[in-house]
Image (cartoon, rainbow, N blue to C red; front, top):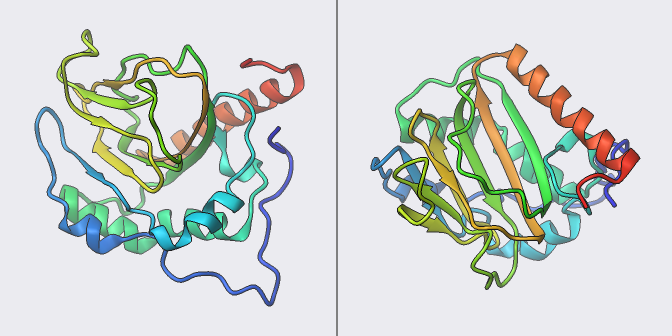
Length: 226
């Protein structure tokens, strides 16, 4: 079970962390797709050389739901990954790709370890989100469920333009809009994901983190999400 009150693990003084974990060159070289909304998919966005280290340091989460990363216990390489995702170089790459200015826009970062049968319903994300980032950390995905589909409408899961296998290091990023429909077929089991959003302001960030934190406490205290 995830440790919901533990602080993120810190690297010992003599522990050498790897260099850059994100392949921003591959990100920059991947064309932006604009139909039916702005998105791109980048397999191998997290470098293969750190696969074992990231897997080792990934938070142990035994319940469905999204958990604020600050409430979880994890190792130094995962911490390094989170810092890169929230850092200025990735933000600048996203700004260049989508043609927008994210200055002053905070991020909300949550982690999933498990998916429940109820997850995956079609939605667009809330209007308070500007950009949604999903990075997957799963090995050898063979199930037909749990593959996120980018849809042409909010009514038909089979009418999709792209399907994302949640394999190790794969990135999906899209601009939230009124037609950024997405969802997936049901899947129950381990499905490791980082979700990060740039949101409109600090009030939204605080509200989202409080909401996810409260939900995490309920799951821990009462064993919800089984």
